Image 1: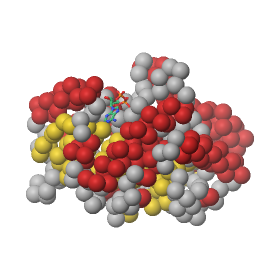
Image 2 (image 1 turned 90 degrees about the horizontal axis):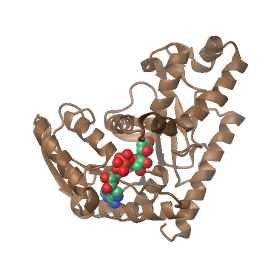
Image 3 (image 1 turned 180 degrees about the horizontal axis):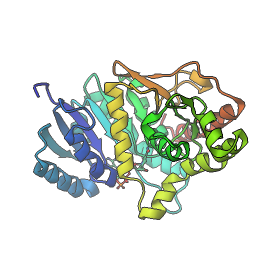
Image 4 (image 1 turned 90 degrees about the vertical axis):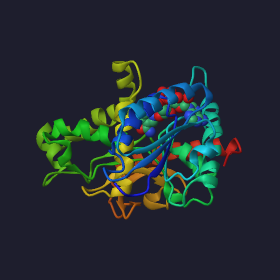
Length: 336
Ligand code: NAX
C-alpha cells in the first residue's frame, strides 16, 4: 500500500445511507484493496453528532486503508482536495411540501455544494449524487461548478438497475451475474424505464428467454408492463412497508458499485448511470438522465446505437418530460 491517499467527501454522512456506506468504503470495496483514503464527512449541525459517532466507529474498525477521517460542517473545508464527492445528504419531502418547495430546498444545498466543489476539489473530482431528487440535484450542482467538466457529474440509478437485475434473475432462472446489458433510462423516480430489450442471460436474449419461461411473447410483455416495470417504480415504497424505513444498505451498495465501476471499468457489459446528456437518444442536451453506460479509462460513456421500439421511446420520453419539468421548476426559482 504505497499510493497517496485518495480524498473522498461524503455528505449526509451522519444519516442512514452514510452509515451503511462509510464502512464499505473504508474496507476498500469501492476503490479497491490497494487504495488508501481520507474520508471527509460533511454534515449540517443537526447531523454532526451522528457523523462524529460514525467517525469514532471507523477509527475503532482499524481499517488498514483508512489514513484519516474528519467531520466538517463547512462545505469548502470538506471538499478541499476531494477526488470523489458522494452527495448523499438532501432535504427530504415533508408533509404538505409542494414539489417546487422540495426542489428549492435542495437547490439551496446542491448549488452551494457545487460551488464549493468548483472552488476546492481536486482536478480529477468525480461527483456522484445520491440525495433525491438525484438527477436534478446533480444538474444544479454541475451548473454551479463551471470549471469541472460536466461528465464528472453523475446521479445514481444503479440501485434501480440492481433492483431490476434482482427481479429478473428468479424469473429467468439465472444468477444475476449472468444477466448483462439491462438499462435504466430517464429519471430516478417512478417514471424510470427499466429496459430489457437488449439484455442477455448467458447466451440467450432476455426477451426470448422470458417468453419461454412465461408461456409466450404476449405473456412476457404482460409481465414486463404489469409487474416488472411497476414493481421497480414502487420498490422504494415496498421496502418502506417492510422495513419501516427507506432503502439504506442496498442504496449504499449501489453507490459502491457505481463508483467502483466508474474508476475500474465495466467489464461485464454495460450498466446504468444518470449523466449529462450530449443529446444521445433524443434526450435534450444538458439534462441529467439515466443511460446505458460503459466506463472506459475512468470516464463514463453512453452506449450508442441501440435500437428503440415505439414502446421504449414513449417510456423514455415520459421520464425525460418529467426531468424537463423539474429543470423548468428550478429555472423558475432562478437557481439555474
Ligand atoms: P437520512 O435522513 O438518514 O440522512 C440524510 C443526512 O443528510 C442527514 O444526516 C442530514 O443531516 C444530512 N444533510 C441534510 N442536508 C445536508 C447538507 N446540506 N449537507 C450535508 N448533510 C446534509 O437519509 P438517507 O436514508 O441516508 O437518504 C439520503 C438521501 O438518499 C435521500 O435524499 C434519499 O431520498 C436518497 N436516496 C436515493 C437513492 C437513489 O437511488 N438515488 C435511493 C435511496 C435513497 O432514497
